[in-house]
Length: 202
Image 1 (cartoon, one colour):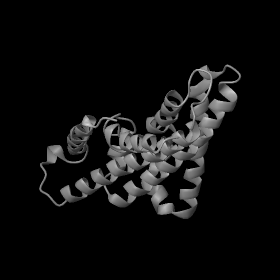
Image 2 (image 1 turned 90 degrees about the horizontal axis):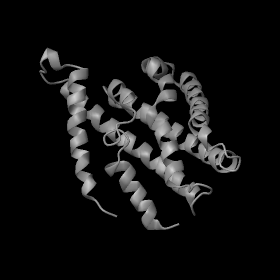
Image 3 (image 1 turned 120 degrees about the vertical axis):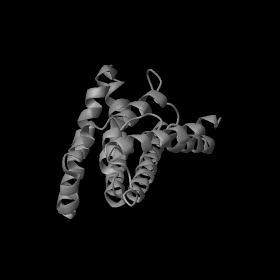
Image 4 (image 1 turned 30 degrees about the vertical axis):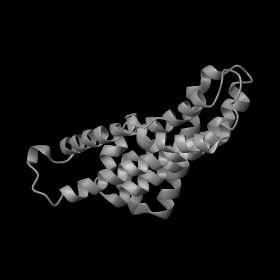
């Protein structure tokens, strides 16, 4: 394992290949929950938890079950099952600890199950840190670190978006642009700004 590799993963996952603004994954929760900062932060933490934990479990499943038994073609469906289980866990915890937050999330909390960002990270880890028959050196640590960094990038995008949308609530925005149209315009501008990080080379 090399520290330079960890730095490259961090910069790539948070800025260059931001899961929302560069890879365009997880846009449903990004647009729907980013109206206020507090729910956006709560959703980001929930997604980060699911991404991290599912990446750990999927790494073990892929390394010790799918590859040795020649079942790599079942990668997607097995990863989805793991993600669904952790989403149910997060949903139960939030429902117990904060019923108002649970009601605010509504349908979007269960939709983490089908959040393509969560599945995308698990698939990306298996593509990047595995060869055809074995894990590369430090594969588990790289996968875990990348999952956390993707969660950080997701949180950064959510907080930036929610901060902008909260400030725009104080502005006199034309009615035709209010809510989702304006959110997509903001998201596109943010995405263009993050594409500027593509100039970084490692």
